[in-house]
Amino acid sequence: MPSPKSIYLAGPITGLSYGVARLGWRKTFSDRMAEIAPHVECFSPMRAKEFLDGQQALQCSGEDLDKINNALCRPLGILARDSNDVAERDLIVANFLGADRVSIGTVWELGHAAAFRKKVIVIMEPTGNLHDHIFVTHNYGWRVDNLEEAILIAASVLTPGI
Image (cartoon, rainbow, N blue to C red; front, side, top):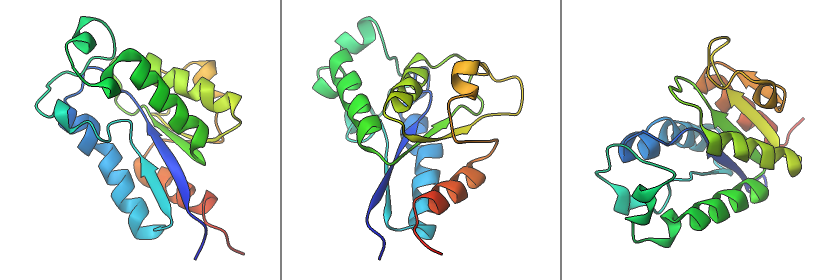
């Protein structure tokens, strides 16, 4: 059995409902990875945040965060855990598909990944995405335009073999 590997699932959260942010593409990715590469564990920035269930438009700044009485959702708590996740994971997957606003947090996470020389897969439309900027589009190992291809690359990169 291969040694355990891990992936951080980065991507826009601001403006999404809790359900979409937690159970949307991240759950699909994690479930599929468990099928084809069970030695790979996926880490979501939304884990252990069930107390946000019912939130219709998550915010990553301002007074909305101050109203949540949980250290995981205070600015320093978000930054500390997400930064640690990027530093500790073997691979970062950044999904920008369908983004309707720029995700400052995800772009920052990609910069952090570059500083730690992490492997990165970017998922983004071929043209027209708000994140189509050289700091994003030239700071990765792979760029694909669909989840399944990203999953297959991730499994391949993190699975030893001949």
